[in-house]
Length: 304
Image (cartoon, rainbow, N blue to C red):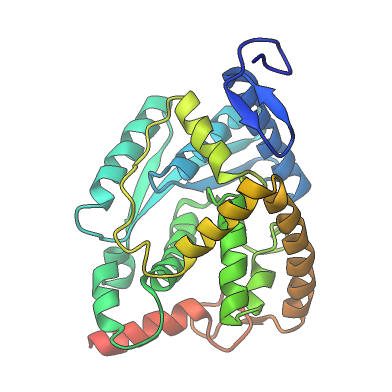
């Protein structure tokens, strides 16, 4: 089987488009699609400093690989930050992988820990939640968002870039729908150009399976050990459900993502009418106290 673009031996079959691509043409397609997404949703502007949040997994390291290439030909700069949740026997491997990769491409890398920012680790937070319904992923995600905000401001960044892919967005969309938390769907809109500190997802239109192949074909090292808390919530079940649908109906994830864009835009407009400033941290939210501060305050009260 030959590549549809250059006639070399094909290495990847993109079922939803019917394309067969060699490794070089496939990698080029991912880079071009990422650049197109960045442009379409106004993610990065001229002369900005981009804070690339890299966990050590395939998505964030692949994103760093692409943004590093783009920064050579476009007018923006990058710095890398890693958030250390304090998960024993898990995060250390990832920190070494990211440190080594950043050294190889000569990019600044800084580590920010939950312990330094919140005076507690993720395990501390999980022990303090007692019988509350929040899953470990919900707690960790809430704390990580605040930690990334802190890190970005500390290095003087204009925008935070994360490696969330199309699958991640669809899973979060389902989780918010199933939990009844529809306000969060508006905050998921890819165009954050009007926010004071923007958080962007340049991979939001790219399948997770494509990023896996991009990492392998470009020999990008990444942590393969899963987070010990990953199966506590329903995200894994939703992932398997969507993958099953895609296996039977190629391209259905793209269709669902287009529907998500329309819905998130409508909810975003509604959220903007209720937008307020958190009384505790000064960040934008839809209530008196944002979800991050609300969680941190509760945990600190229990800790004391």
